[in-house]
Length: 258
Image (cartoon, rainbow, N blue to C red; front, top):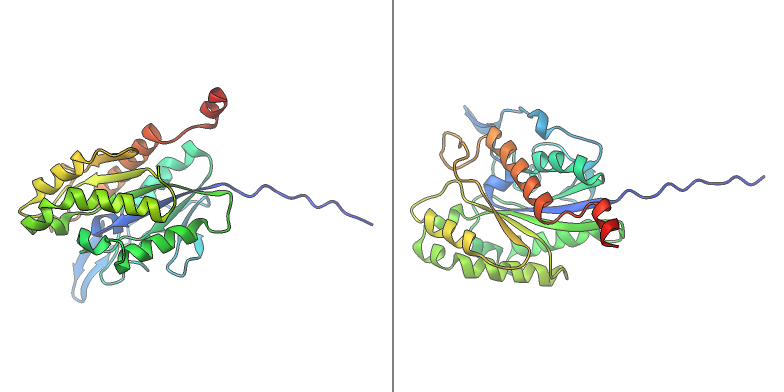
């Protein structure tokens, strides 16, 4: 006797790369103890897990996403709350698809360390490719980039930030074969002597499908460098709203265009 097998449609997954340095990796909730810094373990409701939010682990396997997202990526220092989970939770009800996060950020890294050929860059590109490989229903939607604090310490690095960032964007799009890949970069909330020069460079980048979300004014931890947990939640929402406003096309809009 033959039985009819019902094949359920594979879920669609919108994939986002999270890259940059420590404020993307997440230092929200990091406190100092007798044995060094550690995460306080507090997860805001906006950053809670959900069955339709997944992360690409360091072994290149998809798994349920939980804070801290970068725990097995940014391994040299304690990781806490970043903007990624708040971003995904704000986005998920609006896109009605799975949200896949690809953590790639590493704390304390300058932009020159993200140049093509460098380990950080090549690892990010590899992870991005693997996140959608073999899955025609998975789509790379955007790169979220929060980096630059390290480049504010040196006048020479700050002076070339704009041209180096533009080169980075060109290279990423070329290596992923996504010439129009949306890039959402975060203008710095903190930094050192040349912060305004880097912020100016970030805001002056004028390339197609590249937008800037300004983190200036968001509350910082006691170190005056890293965003607090509350600020990371706020930034995640800001990133989601920016993506939805500039890059998301709803099914209804698609039907109207057709």
